[in-house]
Length: 211
Ligand code: IMP
Image 1 (cartoon, protein in one colour):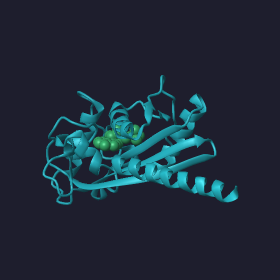
Image 2: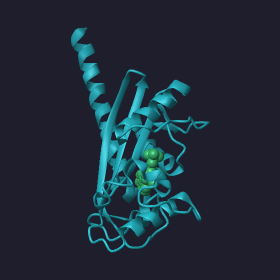
Image 3: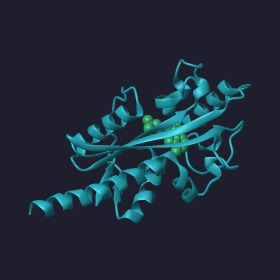
């Protein structure tokens, strides 16, 4: 089975490919980026918009992921703006010195200075589109807190400042397998494929009972 991934984000491509390989699914990264207006008001709407845009361009089953970090003490920001948090007026813009990820982290730590409530969670919504009118969603959440300074070099995005509940390490200090086992994206992908597995049996059952 082959699935087009509706993203250019190298971190997501790497994680999703390594989770789907053992299930016999080959992930195809898109040859060219498809511009998507991420104007949805939720992860779910944006996951749908990405899946639709890439499906329309390439016409093959497409998997999209929209995800981000939610910090309740920051009114839910960065949230759906996670990838471009540094550039938002909200909370003050941050200069990009080395990378966007670094600027996002710098802004997050600045806004949390002196705050005792550092709880946060990652959320991912994945959308698998088989056809423009046939698609399913699955969601995954990973709870944790924001540490005071970045640690670790694995993963991507906010991983160096996110410590999952029950762990002393940040996401960026975990092995890839550990991250996949507890991450928002790992949970969403596993749910999606469990759902597909169930559907497979129900379609088979319907066919068998009609025959
Ligand atoms: P999207 O590409 O619009 O879904 O934005 C995703 C953004 O959320 C990324 O650029 C990261 O900033 C953040 N993010 C999502 N998932 C992760 C993760 O697993 N680790 C760290 N940051 C993440």
